[in-house]
Length: 415
Image 1 (cartoon, rainbow, N blue to C red):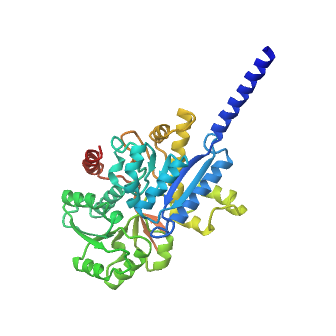
Image 2: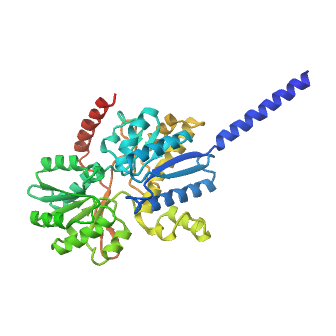
Image 3: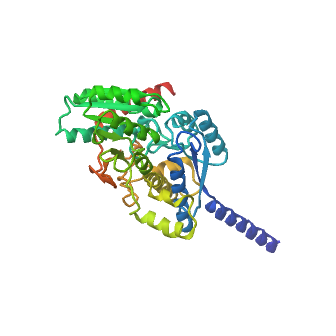
């Protein structure tokens, strides 16, 4: 009986050991519900490619504290209902960390993620008030929101105007849907505060015909034009600017303006155009060099090698450097099995994290899920992007006042 009991206990111990090892090796699934087929295909392939490449690099080193990373990408076509369906499907498959890379889809999925207590990543997209961690406990717009980016653009214009914006004329051209409309509240607030003359120029989707809008802009005769255009819209805008005699160096674009857009405009014709940016571009970064050596030089990359020269590839690396580091922190502090609560705490423990210079340093807390909101202005000089400012985070008090007002409204209507 003694030998039988010992044998049984030994077997139970082996099973428990195997179960623990299995739990430790269970993959950590990241759910990328992206538009892979319609409006955002100018950016999603590069970002998905970057995320998968980075996951392969980390998995070759043992993953995140011993757990392999699994990237699950599914198309939502930038349709909110399909985004919800993607979220529900991946939730059933054990995903706890979701990313939509779409403002309209993020807004649709957000209430469900909040109710379920799942992590919704919202870097560089989505509603600006989600940086309020007291209200949006499960939403992480780490990095600059569109609100923060717009505030930084205004600060840059103020710097160029010797610190005085009174009488300065600013035009804002934007596609007339959720993404383009997102920063208007901040822009109006800053116009009232600083005394600059603001004129809004909504442009109907899909934005391929901007002739009438740029004629209106020419008549307004702005000192600066801020644009929230995307992809081919940039090419149309550049053509209309030239036709209307508006200097390229008057324009500041949202961050979604890449090397493909420059090539389509023409490198020489685009000279002087500016963009706000959230990440460092180019291939002169240790992680990209490692990806080239370990994957692409060995024929193991997850997409076209030319995409590594695209700032959107760097954007994907930056976004998921933050996400992977947050999960790593979660495992270190809370152990396994992972839960959304542990991941939340891991993300909220990020301090001055910059992925070795890939993005401006971010510090995330339970109250501030934005991380600091720093961007910088870059200018195309005819051959390359040249920084025109340091990483800046401006008008934080103004932004936070609007954040608190909007988040309080959300909290009131979503009890």
